Structure formats: C-alpha cells, structure tokens
Length: 321
Image (cartoon, rainbow, N blue to C red; front, side, top):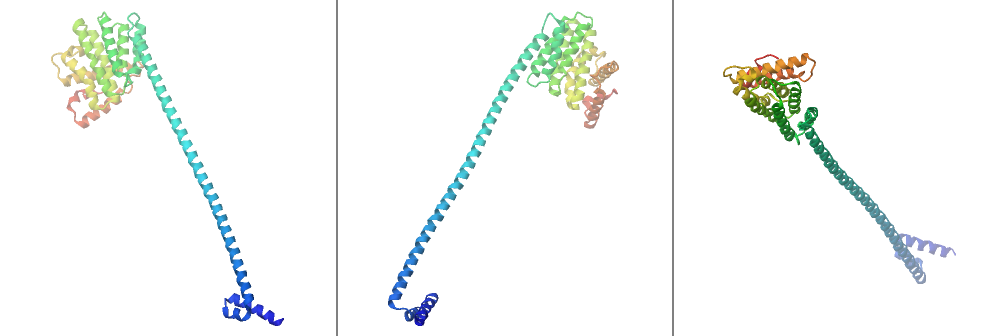
C-alpha cells in the first residue's frame, strides 16, 4: 500500500516537473498509456472549450460592432435629418423673404403711383401739396430718387407757370417750399446735386415771365433748403458741387441775387452765404427747426475748406453765420 502511495507521488511529481525518467520508473506501461489517453482527452476538452470561447467572443464582438454601426448610422441619420430640416427652413425663409420683398415692392410702387396722382392733380392744390410732402419719402429711397426728383422738378415748373405774380402768392409759395423741401430730403450728396440742377426750371420761367421778385424768392428757398441741407450731410467738396448750379445761374443772372454788374464767383458765393444765413435766422427766430443745425454745420464746412485750402469756396465763408 505504501509502495502504491509512493508511486502515485512519484507520478504526480514527474508530471509536475515534466520528468520523463521519473515517470518511466514510477508508472507502468499500462498506466502511462492511460495517462496519455487522459491527457489527450483533457487536451481535446480544453481545445473544445477554447473554440467555444473564441466563438462566444467573436459573437460578442460582432454584436458590439453591429451596435456601434447602428449608433453611427442613427447619428448620421439624425444629422442628415437635421441638415435637411435646416435646408428646408432656410429655403422657406428665402422664399418668404422674396415674397415679402415682392409684396413690399408692389406696395411701394402702388404708393408711389398714388402719391404721383396726388402731386399731379391739376384741379386741387391741397392734394398737390400733400403729394409733394409724401414724395419726400421717395426722394430718400435710392430706387425712386431719380423718379421722384424728376417729378418734383416738373411740378416746380408747373407751379411757377401757374403763379400769376408779381412774386409768389401764398398757395404757390407753399407749394414751392414743399417741392424744394422734398428735393432736399436725402442724405445722398449726389442726389442733392441732381436736385439742385432743377433750378434751371427757374431760369426758364424767369426768361418768360421776368418776375424778379418771384425768382429771388425761389432762389432763397433753393439756397436755404438745398445748400443748407448739403452743409449738414455733405463734405465741403461735395457741398461745392451742390452749390455749383445755383452759382452758375446767379453768375449769368446776378439780379436774381440782388447783385449788380458782373460779379465774380467769389462775390456770388458770398451772396449765397448771406442769403442762407439771413433766411435761416428768420426761420430760427420764428420757431422753425429746419435751420437749427445749419450754423454749426456751416462752421464745420468752412473749417474743412480752410484746412483743404480750397480757394473755390472761400467766398462762402466770408460771412459769419
């Protein structure tokens, strides 16, 4: 019994140490065959479990990959849906913006047409006066400025033609003031330059009517409204361009500015400044606000002219506001 126990220990030790000599001495051939068969069985069982575990891990990995792929597919679908929704929203917004702009343009065109009908009503001076006032908004609109300016210039010619004189009667003076005030209702200096050129209508009227009082009154309105407005919104150089049509007319027809002989451009500029300051003072004293900012703006213009050494406009600054 003790010998069997010792053999078992030797076999176990031989297996543990992987000692073939000890195994050969301790175990018989039959025992060794059984051990080999047992080892082979255990090895096959181990291999089978290993293969099963490998397939289990592979299946788990596949499940994980499928889940990850599903996650990314879902994320992409959500992103794509969001992008498509944003594109639809942007497309809808652009479409509605175009529709709104189209409707707005149509409304503005209709308003311009209706305002034009008021401003050209031959039978009702009150309606014409309202039309001139409403045309201010279109003068300040770059899309309608040229149309509104042309219409106001033609209306000025008609109002002057209808005036019987001498001088401007109250209804026609109110109309002329409204027209020239509308022409000045812009912050675009080029638009003011175009508006000032409408003073040629006065030259044509004066050539036919020879109404000196009327012509002087209209020149004063041009100076205070258009040149005064240019002082507020234009640079000094642009103001000289706004003033040029008025100075050209007064150089040819100096009597329209109460000048005599053949005045120099500097003389005409000085007279323009005198008219502007005198009429502005009257308006300010009477409580009107049209000229409230002109004295300050005129000083700024003169400072710019002096700094730039522009001789062309020196006469404008020879008279203090």
